[in-house]
Image (cartoon, rainbow, N blue to C red; front, top):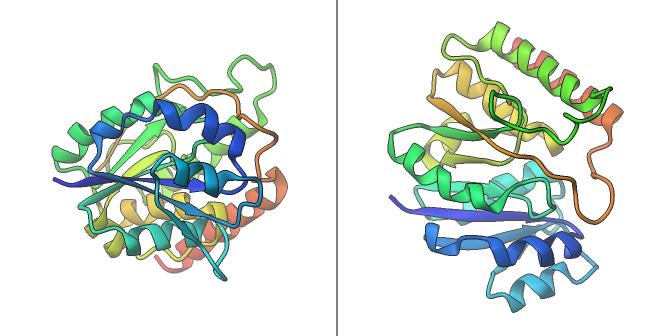
Length: 227
């Protein structure tokens, strides 16, 4: 089974410098990056590390980046990874065995037993609670199999054939949630393993809470309508 690693970047020079050297490249058959228009040296750094970079061009956003990545790749599956500090590069090693067991989607969960979410030490965990709420909606309304604890996390691997079946057209940060929902609808095999989410490196997340939450709700109701 051939598996490639796709990096998703947009002005992530600090995170890339800290994370890329720790990526276990020997665990995948290839690596490339999809860049959303970085101007801080991210592209130049990745290319200096021998990582080919595909520039998104006119079609912007995370959803478009996923679609470009799967269109570009010839591998049987893609591991999707953002070198921003949140995702542990050591976990890249864990995807292959679970994919080779026949699973369609493998998610590194920040919510299941044994996992760690970067808000777990906070008294108020607004982002985590919001993620769990959207996961609850997806599981209750669409899932007939094992409960999926982290329907939103982008640190995941997806079989290329399964991605084609799902045909996700969601914009921006809704793409992962839509994939999870559509996989539930089509009864594809989803499996998770616990991961440790660390603090972001190099500034705040580009996913602003209120507009991103509204986008998730809009997508959820659209998927209900398409049911």
